[in-house]
Image (tube, rainbow, N blue to C red; front, side):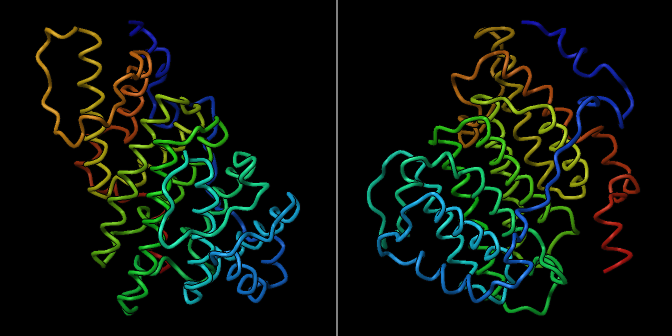
Length: 339
C-alpha cells in the first residue's frame, strides 16, 4: 500500500494552505431565481406547478417545454415559506422527476407526479439542473432566515412542514447515492446540494426547536454517508474536498458534526487496518448500524485516501478546546453583530 502519498497530499503545514491549497473551493450559492425572479412569477408558479404535481399524465412533450418548466420550479423553490403549498408541490415534482434515475419500483400510493417523456428518456440530462434548483429549498430567503433557526414565535405547524420537505429531499439524496447510476456531473451536483443544505442549517447557532435539531443531525448523517459512497463510486475532486473541509471547520461549534466525523473516521480506520494487517489483526468494534457504512467492495486505495482526507476534514481537533477559535467563524460573527 502506497502510504507515502499521505505526505504528498499534505505537503504544507499552515492551516490556510495545507491540503488542496492549489485548488479553490466551490461556491454554494443556491439555484438562483432566474428570469421569473426579476419580473415576479408567483402566479405563474401557482398555476403551473399545481398541474404538474397532480396525478395526471404530463403535458410536457419536448425538451424546450421541460426546460421552461424547470425555470418555473427554480423560482417556485425560492418562494417565501408562507407559500408552503407551492414550495411543497415544487419539491414533489423534483423528487418524482429525479426518481427517473432510480431502478423501476412498485407503484407508489398515492401516485407521484408524472414524469415527462423527454425526461424519462434521458433523466441524466436534467438531473444536475434539478439538483441545483433544490438548493433554493435550503437557502434563506430575502429578509427571511430558515424558519426554525432563529424565529421562536412561529407556529410548530410551519416549522414541521418545512422540516418535512427538507427530510424528503435528504431521503431522495440517499436513494440516489445508493441505487442510481450517476455520472461524475450528477455526483458533483448531489454532493453540492448536501453541502448547501448543511451550510444553511449548521452555520448559524444551534436552533431552538427539536425538529430543527433532528434535521441538523440528519443532514450531517446523509452528507457523510453519501460522501463515502461517492469515494467508492466516483471519487470527489480536490475542489469538492476543499469545500467540505472549509465548511466543516465552520461547523465545529455543532456537536453533531464531531459525532458524525467520529463515526465515519472510526469505520474507515477499521477497514484500513483490515487492509493493512489482514484478518489476524484484532477487529475494531463497530456497531451493527455502521457495519455497512463503508461499502464491502471499496478498494484499499479508496479507503486509504478517504480515511486520510476525512481525518483532516475538521482541522486540528485540539481547536475544539479553544472556544475563541471555534466561535470565530464568519457565520457566527454575522449573527452576533447583525441579527
